[in-house]
Amino acid sequence: MTVPAWLSIPFAGLLLCIAIVPLIFGEWWESHKQYAVIFWSLLTAILFATQFGTGAALTKVSECFFNDYLTFIVLLFGLYCVSGNITFEGDLAGSPMVNVFLLAVGTLLSSCIGTTGSSMLMIRPVIKMNAWRSKKSHIMIFFIFLVSNIGGCLTPVGDPPLLMGFMRGIPFFWSLHLLPVLLFNMIVLLFAFYQLDMKAYRSDISYGGKPDISKPGTSLTIGGGHNILFLLMIILAVILSGVLPSLPAFQTGNGEAIGIPIGGGEVFPLSSLIEVILILLAAFLSFRTTDSGIRRKNHFTWGAIEEVAILFIGIFITMQPALMLLKEVGPTLGLTHPAQMFWATGALSSFLDNTPTYLVFLTTAGSLGFTQGMASTVGTIPVRMLMAISCGAVFMGANSSIGNAPNFMVKAMADENGIKMPSFFGYIGWSLAFLIPVFLLDTIVFFL
Image 1 (spheres, rainbow, N blue to C red):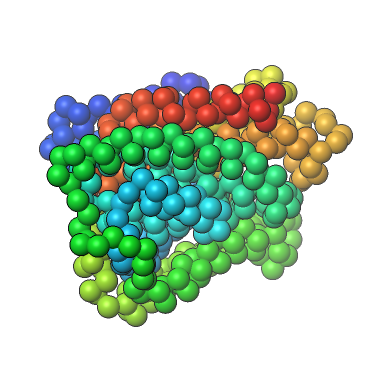
Image 2: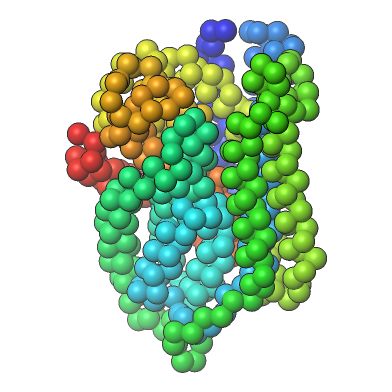
């Protein structure tokens, strides 16, 4: 089916609501954002039905809900619950060097437990250790840059696009090719962060700010440490969701996924059902086995996950026509060079779901007829081009506050803890000032 560009109007409308309405009607937005989500989602379904029929619209919405949104929000919910039952305590104060250390650890951890897992695990200690600081929004912004996005590039566990590549024949440890790019970006961004944080730190000190502890040191203890097992359980569920669909036991005779019918010939795969059950079980066991005092120490509430759940159901539904249009026009864009792939994949991943965006350009690269490079089920792709597509999808989700799910979750948790975060356009200003120059350097050094 040919998708007209005007079907993407509701997606643009919802993005503008997220960007502008909180600036003008902040209190109204806090209490009524769900009505904006309902309006733009229904408009998408109605326009889609007008163009393709009611049956096609219902199928698209149900497929989006079960195969995209449900697994997404359950994963986020599970990680939010389990990380909320882990607390870090000690005498580390939020100084520039400590913050650089925390950001570096979180960035490297993202490739081990995913950007979402690392973000949920690290954000609370970062907020807690910097509670005494008055100027700290920049800490959250660089946290999003590094921990919630760039750090997830080294393994398929790190970020969903790379998991999709693994499912299409890219070796599990191939992503280690991206280590030089990751280290380069970490050095540049952490250097810039240190300069900013040192200036803010000195300002806080000059105005009488001081850490909440009487004698800063270097000790750090963990409470609810057994929840690391539940965190690993969630990561295992994610890995299984990528591995199980390729096994014969999870396929029909003609190679299609076995699952629960959701209409229009589509199914909710059995592998996804197993993933959802394991994640919810991990969250349940985490709450059952952890003292509520740990959640009180973490100031645990449901506000942040509720906000993400409301907004992202609308984002997922309204972006579907844009993703379908991208799938149609992707192969005709004339992208044949790694630098082009890096920016095309990255620009669209800044606002659309980076997983289907990655798949579109991975498939496009595989269809170009290359004979040397990395063999996959979609074709042979030169190593530098595969690096460019992977980096574009993973890195540039940091360009906007909705580019990657952890971005908005971190922002919501920062807002909930009284940290004044920039608006939608304000955040893009930060990314233009710090990320885009780094990505230009990436282009020159790695992709030209």
